[in-house]
Image 1 (tube, rainbow, N blue to C red):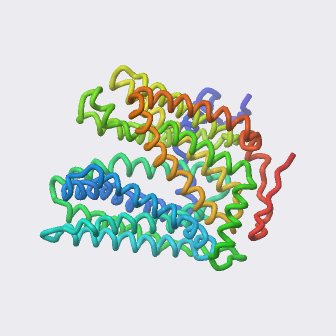
Image 2 (image 1 turned 180 degrees about the horizontal axis):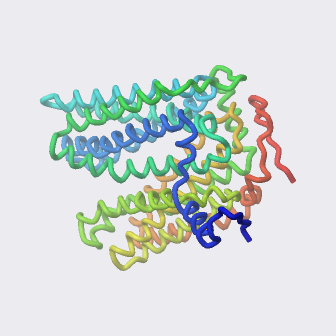
Image 3 (image 1 turned 60 degrees about the vertical axis):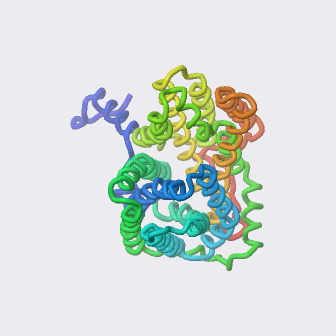
Length: 441
């Protein structure tokens, strides 16, 4: 029974209000923390502009070459750059002011968009320059992302990490839904040059917000980036089953259950090219709906099991998508998969931010970046290969089944990950490169 006093609301109303708050977004981090609020606004605007460019850029490459293969090479080049530089980005995040690292890379990304605008304005835009920009994006993303991820635990309280992660998810999914839609309109109405300049304008807002934030200095025991420091991060990640679980489950889900490369072929059987955009948008819509009703995640403490459950739901949703007889059910299962992916992302983020010592957060963020970028890239290749050997439906359904099996195997082989409970897991005082932690028995 909930205790009441003379001024309290009747019990049913109080219960309804409690459940209402659990099913809505928790804005506490935005209300309480100025620097988190500035980061949120800046990233919201600049990411929106970046999503506009994600439409304009491949469109320009295809318009210049009429080659689908060359458009696909863009992703390979960017992913390759991330693989090469992610560890360096992690080491820099542990050795330099993290806000300054994000500020400098954001300015460099804005310069890339300025170059794109200038190139698009030429009578004969240079194709080679577009491939150079693609690699530059990968390098800058690999250097920026670890510092950006490692800042979060400095900006909010520990009990607010889930709420902050959900707010970041809302910010990201809004950009993924609205940015490409506006990008297509801008390319058609004002042309490529003005579209790239729109992206530049959004970077200005992002840079202003970062400039107004307070410094986020490196840990007191920070050392210069080196191969030894990178190896320390890898050794630490290997020693923590809780972290290995977050990497392994996500990679299993993405490798076996990533059907996005098959969307053009699937669209042909569901209504043609006009439904292709709906297939790509459906997962982002599901992610947004999850984030918009995510207040209940603050009450979850078994985050390892939460990741396993979310990845299992992803696999089941992919199976449903593969078996769906029509467009409506296909979109429903894709939206469900998107919601499950966001659920997994939130709980993985909480585990990372609760269990990694501050002196190691940048290097571990570099490892995390490789894990969540390699899975989708390899998964799309796997989906295409299986579809070529058998057919599209077999590729999707078998991938979903293998995803579920992989989650069961992870549950059995990683008991500490499965049993992770934030209420009984405590990070010991940061001891520098040792990153010593203890777990209550």
